Structures are given as structure tokens and as C-alpha cells.
Length: 179
Ligand SMILES: [Zn+2]
Image (cartoon, rainbow, N blue to C red; front, side, top):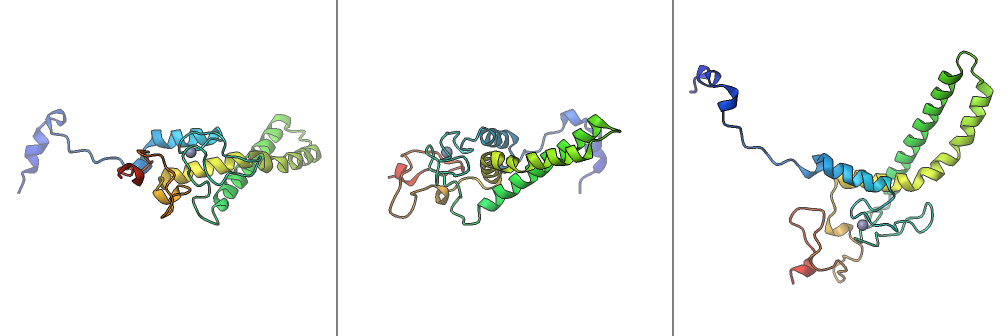
């Protein structure tokens, strides 16, 4: 049995530091910031490429740079970006209402405030929707890193990932590089 007083007498600086466990990549703040930063620029969070959108709210099926499927192969993937868009629009409208009240207090023009907020309530979700899409993809990639099944054209008979491509998962490279 260890003598607790023996370890207590050793100054903290002289004690051997325990081996540090590797930080899971999902908790790497630098990686998360990089993914979110690319999402804020409406670029592919995975590789930073442009060209994710065919029209303002219509995404290409996959990234032209890394072939990441923009819906990650899931039919209900849009729900995540819908929630991001909805919450952001609500927060912006609440912030606008609060600012309007604080700036004009105590003579708040309630009717003008109401109609002006209704006026911005309609276009904000449409204008913000592309960012909601790329930000949701960034958030999702933060916690669920890319796997081979996320890459377009990466079925059993077709491999379009350039040889040697290092995917966003430790130890995972395109199979064509191994051949
Ligand atoms: Zn990409």
C-alpha cells in the first residue's frame, strides 16, 4: 500500500506527469474552428472549395473539390440546416426587437417596430439559408468526421477519389492509393 504522506511531501513540480491521453479529434477546437470558418464563407467545410451551390438555395450533390456528398447520403439531412436557419432567424429578430425597444425607450413605436420586424422576418431565412447549409455541414463534420461512404462516386465499382487522398479520418486513405 502506498504511503499517502510520501507523495504529499514531493513538490508538484518534481512529480512525474501522467501520460497525456490523445485528444479526440471531435474535441479539437482548431479543427472545429477551421470547419466552421469555411462554413461561414459558404465553402466546403471539409476542403474549403467553392462551388457548393448551383443556385442560391440549391446545393450541388457533392463538393467539386473533395466529392463530399453535401447531404452525406441521408434523405432527412436538410432538417439540420432548417434548424440552424430557423434558430438564427429567430435570434436575429429577437435581437432586432430588443435593440428597437432599448433605443427608443420609453416611447417605443410598437406598431412601426412590429411591421419592420415582420418585414425582415420573411427575407432573413431565405438570405441566410446557404450559410445554414454549410454551417450545418461544418457542425456535423465536427462530430462525425468524413468516411468513405460520404464521398460521391465511392461505391463498390467506382472510385473517383484521387490516389493518395488523405481523408479527414485518421488512418483512412482512398483504396486506389493502396493498389
Ligand atoms: Zn470539399
